[in-house]
Amino acid sequence: MIALSVGPSRAGRVVLAVADALLALSGVALLAGSGRLAGGLHSSTDGVLFDGRATAPGDPARFDDLAGVVGDLVRLLGLCGLPLAVAGGYLLVRALRRAAWLDGRRLFVRGAVLTRTVDLGRAALTVDARQLVAHDPVTDVRVRLPLRGLPPAELGALAGALGDDPAAARVRDLMV
Image 1 (cartoon, helix red, strand yellow):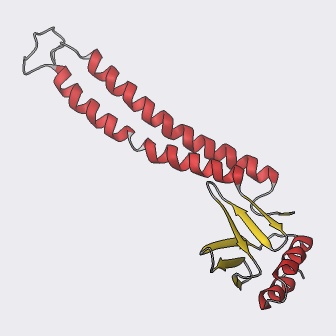
Image 2 (spheres, rainbow, N blue to C red; image 1 turned 90 degrees about the vertical axis):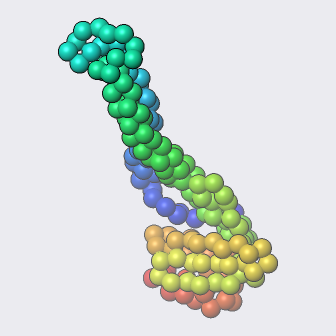
Image 3 (cartoon, rainbow, N blue to C red; image 1 turned 60 degrees about the vertical axis):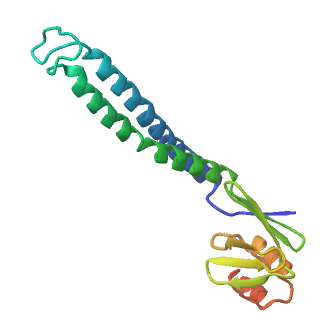
């Protein structure tokens, strides 16, 4: 098995993980904070008139009726934190899990959730300066492997795994 150096360096992964965790936490804080703010807004105005005097329920000049509407709007605004939390969590998992390796002629690429694998011997291959795209017609799996930044030894191992395919020559050209 040959591990391939895809994605950022170890230090870069730490920076990405911290940034993604902050994004996720800001989304959670927005969700939780808006709920607490809306609840506190409603309870702090319960039974108070606009001029500060206490009143009975049902009085049209009560603050808590207005606070209920504002509180609902604040809760809706807090829902904007949900996509932030989900996106931050996904990006965090992706930054920590992303990997690729060769095992004989099989290429494995692990993303945030799935690990995809193709047999390079039977896959339809496309290579450009940035990536290798391998599509296995039997399993209908498509894998993209970024080639930029791969060291020459790893590019050589990949070219060897590609065998006689014309894509192997294009990968060897990137070794220079």
